[in-house]
Amino acid sequence: MKTENETWNPEALLRCIHDGVYYVDLDRRIGYWNPAAERITGFTSEEVLGSRCSDNILMHVDEKGVSLCATMCPLAHTMKDGELREVDVYLHHKDGHRVPVYVRASALRNDRGDIVGAVEVFTDVSTREATLLKVRELEQLAMLDGLTQLANRRYVEGELGSRIEEAWRYDLPFGVLFMDIDHFKKINDQYGHEAGDAVLRTVAATLAQNARSFDLVGRWGGEEFVVLLRNVDSPGLERIGERYRHLVAQTLTHAGGETIQATVSMGGTILRKDDSSDTVVRRADQLMYRSKSEGRNRLSIG
Image 1 (cartoon, rainbow, N blue to C red):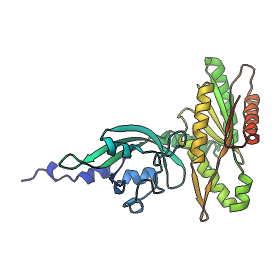
Image 2 (image 1 turned 60 degrees about the horizontal axis):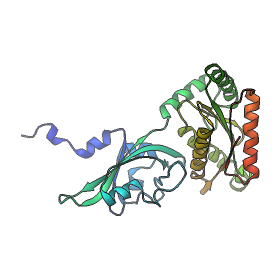
Image 3 (image 1 turned 180 degrees about the vertical axis):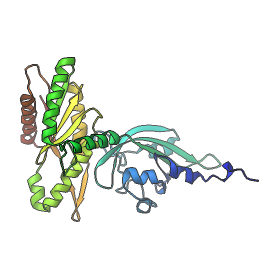
Image 4 (image 1 turned 120 degrees about the vertical axis):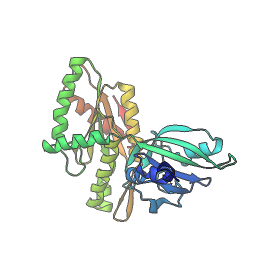
């Protein structure tokens, strides 16, 4: 007589876990896609089964925006040598933005020990829960930007003053990133204002979901965004800013039958001894305009 444990279906267990799971054959065609993979990526199993993982689905990139699908992804490496791999990557969500995930890739073998494919388990490592809590707090304070769901300028200005005081009190480094979507007027003129709004939402989602939990991303106004960064020095500010820039440049917005790829010009600065809220933002803004004048889609630090 079979026990209860002997009647378990392995795929039923995979449907219950919180992490995304999918497996591919040697041609990297997807043969399984669990509900958590649907939730994390926005793609249903019907949309992906039978497709290759690089067919405009996940399109993994690293923090510099380099496509891993084109340069041997973790699954491909694992199928080649059979080694387990663990890596942080950024996948493409169906809505267009980038989601940070922690990936574990393992080889699948047949009874003879031959590699016949690979399985990837991926965990959403975005600050979604912290973001949702922050959204609820901002809604209560009426300090949420209605279009992008980011903190609005009023909230950012108040938080900026508090964080500068904190930096002085505890002698902590503090940084500001100021960014502007490149050629945004042209996007509105060419695709319409609804498409422009969609671009704003997509860029905002990419910034928010890839922020550190203790940093604040806000919409300053129009197509401008600000990030307040606790405990960051100049090299760290540049590293984070470049990661944002690369991820935005690899973000696609689908609106009105069109696919729009936007970039941002950025300015970044570290708080100085004689700074006020106004001066540190003004300097970051001026550095952003330097990036504009030097060709756009770049970061200027000063």
